Every structure is written in structure tokens, then in C-alpha cells.
Length: 244
Image 1: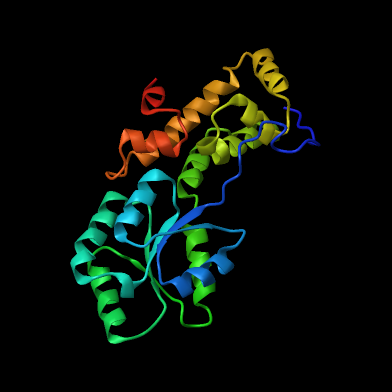
Image 2 (image 1 turned 180 degrees about the vertical axis):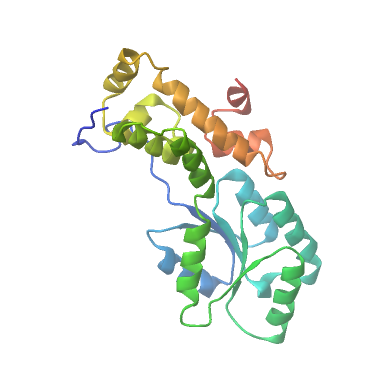
């Protein structure tokens, strides 16, 4: 598949909007501000004021992780934290420590018994780097698993075929049309479709739909997500259109 350099803007070529990986937070306001500065260009931060806001965010859109301050979690909210980790096992919950006092220390220990397995101390110089590295390591796990399986089946395939599937795997969650896929590949939609037709392959749309279904299956492994939630996260027009 020949690839050409795109000279038009992404919007004029019908490209889907690029989205930075998102992180949901329940943090003190000064920590939010520092987090926004530290994550600029790497992650989109979605700040909430309560655990219910965290639950709502995780249901409504894909997030790479949840960051919570131990100091903002009340004792009676600990069961809700356990429910969060149970309902959304693929979304790591991270305790972000921004101060050391008896309450924060006690709550941190309690969070560990309620399912929070990652801790980052933001009061030490290397804390922010550790947080960025932790999120980078956890991010894109579904895409990595899918791409690994796809590459294993592409033994002997050309570089261009491998490139097609690599792009497809990474952009499928946010694409709903062949036009947008063609934009990501830097080819015209008509060129993309004709190449597949001449090679007697299924239409590009079939590959896109199948890849999106793989992501849907991965999302549905989370007990906390309904079919409607998954349809919304993958930008289907409705749960009914997702079902079709």
C-alpha cells in the first residue's frame, strides 16, 4: 500500500480529532495545578470533586488511570474505593500522596486494603517523574495486547501491511469511518478502498469494524461498564447502532 504525504490539514482531510490519554483525579486544588503543568502535552486531566465524579468519568470515557489523594477519602468512602477497583479492574487506581500527616498515612494504609495497589509520593523530587513513568507503562495496554496478537499472525507480511494494522490498532477506538482511517494512513479514501478491492480483500470498513469490536470486548470485561457505556466510549451514535 503506497503512502503519500498529506499536505492538507487534518480537519480538511476528514481526520478524527486526536485525543490525549485521559487521567481522572480526586486531588487537592494545588496538586491539580501542578499535575496539569506536569502532564501538559502527555495526558488530559479530568478533575473531579468526589468519588461519584470518578465513577461517572470512568463510565463516560476511556481513562488510563485514576489518581486519588488519601487525604480526600473519608473512612466511610473506603468501600466505594473497593467497588471502584472491582468494577474497573483495567483502570489502575493510584494513591497520590501530597502531604504527610497522621490522617494521610492512616488512609493510605487503608486504601491498600481496599484495592489500591499503586502509590506515588509527590512530596519527593522524583515523585512526578515516577508518576509519569507509571502512567506511561500502564497506558495503552489493550492496544499492546491486540497488536501483539496481530503481529504474530502477520509473519511474512510486507512493511506496508504491518503499518496498516499498527495504525488501525492504535486509532480504531476513536474512528468511525473509512474516511477518517484513510486520513490516518495519509491516502485518499477512494485509493484505500480500491487497493483492497484489487487485492480481493474485504473492504477496509470490515477491518475497522472488527478492530473496534475487539476494543468493545476488552471494555466489556469491566463489570462497571454497560453496553451503553461502551457504545458511548467508542463514539457509536447509540447503543442500538453498536448492537447492529
